[in-house]
Figure (cartoon, rainbow, N blue to C red):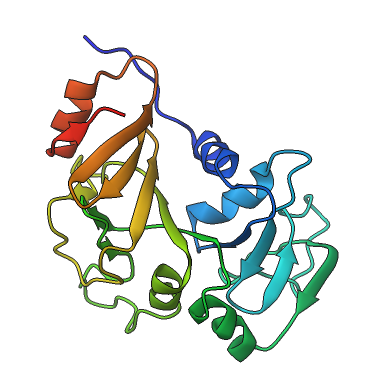
Length: 215
């Protein structure tokens, strides 16, 4: 019987941060991806962009030091590093659409094995009415990574053969970082990058319900 421990949200954020190269311009999506800002390795310069018009965003402020005039796209208080800047929303979207971001890290409801992304609506009544900036990020960044739990609360895989939710982008996701494993999306399907200790590849395939090629 397998004996493994899931990555915590902070461990997952640290795992994503470890793969961001020095000098990268990166957008962190709303939700779990914002935690990545707190785990950028010391000595590595990563320039974080926020959709609402920030470049040079820092980690979350210490408790009691929050400034609610300085927030990210998810309305969470953030900090600004030396040399950081504020600018118009239109300029922010020009960055996102113009190929100026090296990486965006987004959450997701579903990702297909070939990198289709569904992360804005489950079709439930009262869901948000439009895709927003996620579409611009998913297609505009040089690389789109997804950070999410592998399974839903019902125990169903969020990595699927074909997305059943409305799509954000087609074939845009290059990597999926989850609490159990890191996978690459390719034209030939899923490729394993790494997994938590104690989890066998065969069991991971059973959880996902799709074949996964060894790295």
